[in-house]
Structure formats: structure tokens, C-alpha cells
Length: 263
Image 1: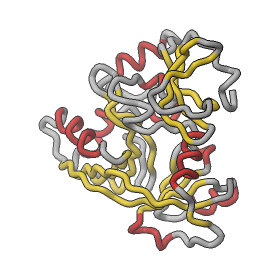
Image 2: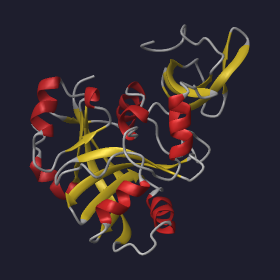
Image 3: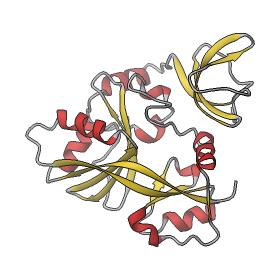
């Protein structure tokens, strides 16, 4: 797949105030304390039960200003969850929508160029060579040889990166360990945060979730919500499907290697 750009909308949560850094570090699953101005990293926002509220990309603007973006439809949910724990904390939480220019399909050399630009936001995992720009800063990248991609191309890129979408591949009933995001959205060395007990318990015991998100080859006509059937047995459920590619929650007991992509 050649490099392309694609415009999409995210919800944005702004957290501003003297206690912003301390507050977010206490509430999010990843380390926010060490973020420097201009840096960003992903983090899961969890309920006290350990179940997922949302996946957020946290950008540090300054010690007192953080911008959190997430999948459309989950900004207000995230703000409400954060506000429940904002007790005697000096910061304000507001929400809005923001258009982003997503650049995907980059080579390592192209990625190094784009991600070095002042307003670039690394997207997904580093190995996915993905970069975002807000539309406000769209002038900071030139289209050059990039072509405008389609929604289908962007979706295929997302599936191939095994990047789950909130409310689709992971819901309010999902545990962090089943999403495949603990490598980039959870810190196992930071202090306490709501939901930490479940995350730490499963990690310390080497426990696996009853099901986990995997990239598989979809059967013809597969639809989201339908069971994944292998050798006559239901082994999981499709959560995202695009052409022959799919993300699916596969049961722990199932051997899905024959249909997994990149297994």
C-alpha cells in the first residue's frame, strides 16, 4: 500500500490547570508524569473495575495544559469519567471535536520526515509508521507525492496494525489485556490509578484473557457481530471487517493460527 492521507474526526478533551499533570497521572493507565512539552503517548482510561472507558492519546502542551484525543463519540464519556474523580483538583475539563489529517502507509524514511515536524502526532505504534496532524496545522505537511486515500484504505491500514476502535473492537466490558494495547497504553511501573488492580493482577500472574483481539482472514460475506467459525466450531466473534481482513475476539482455548494474519 502506497502512502496516503485521510481526513477524519476525533473527539478532544482539554485538561488545563495547575494540577492537570498530577491529576491525569493519577487517573490514566500510562505514565503522564514524564511527558515533556510537545510529546504524546497513548493511555487507557479505565473504570475502577478495570474495564475500559476509552483509549486516549495524551499530548502535553505545557505543565498545565494537556490535550487528549480519542475516537469520535467518546470525548464526553471520557470527560465525565475524569470529572467523577476531580475532587479538590485545580484544573478544568472541556470537550470539542477536531478534524485530523491521518497519514498512513509511510516508509521508514517518510515516517522519519513527517514525525519530526513540530506539529506531528505519532499515531498507533511506532512500527506502524503512522502520523497525524490536526487540520489547524495541516499547513505543516505538504501533500507532495501523497495521494488522498479512501475510508476503505484507512480501515485496512487500521486492521493490519491491529489497532482497536473504541466502541467497536473494545467496549465498556473489555479488559485491557484482551485489546493488545498494554504494550503502548499501560505502564506497569507508575503509581496507582483506578482500575490498576485488575491490570496488575493479571500481569503478575501471567494470566490471559478469556478472549483476545486478533487479526484474521475473514470468510466471504462475514459481518461484524457474527461468529467466527473454524472447523465447524464457533471460536470468536468478528468486531471489524473490511474486505478479506478482520479483527475478531478469539477465545483463549481456540487455535486460530490457520486463519490469523502474521501469526
